[in-house]
Length: 198
Image (tube, rainbow, N blue to C red; front, side, top):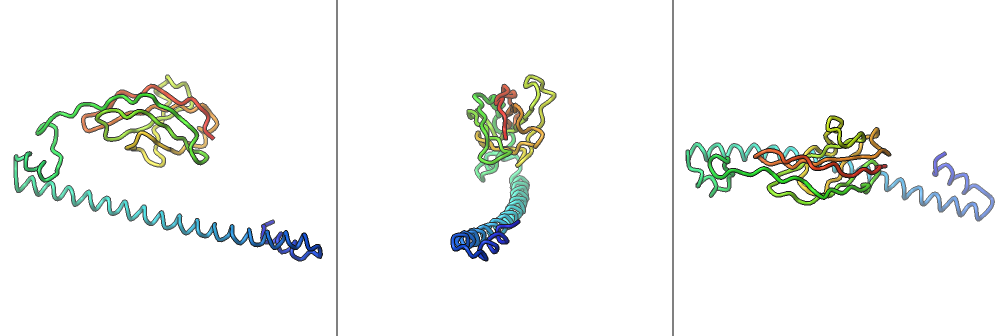
């Protein structure tokens, strides 16, 4: 029975105290409905904004590639000018980038919301981004880890919150983090966590 129906029945009572409860419940129910509608609207707006962001990102990347290609055509074999224009040059034209360092000092905690896990670790040198793997099996068995893909697969910060699948909840969860850059991958971190996420 909904709060709206209950409030009507309480307001119809001959007992003033019960009536007061009905009016209060009616007000609170109305506030809740308003909040739900606002949340639905905000979610839709967020989805639209996220889609627009991805479209703009794709357009910007395409424009960036077009500009880089044209600069290379206009000024061939001139990496110094390319860098002066702000473009990155490949390692064989400038300097070799070293592999990223191994992620260390990992920590895990329950996320702010249910079915979320948050991990922290020390910043590793020469890192462009990170990927995270998780398991609820023996943490030493590399074959049992699966790549975290929600809410994304690639992360750029040393504090990462990700979604935990239902079949991983309330089990001892372990993660490993790998750092990446254009030169390659770091050694995989030692497993850390070992806590139950709800």
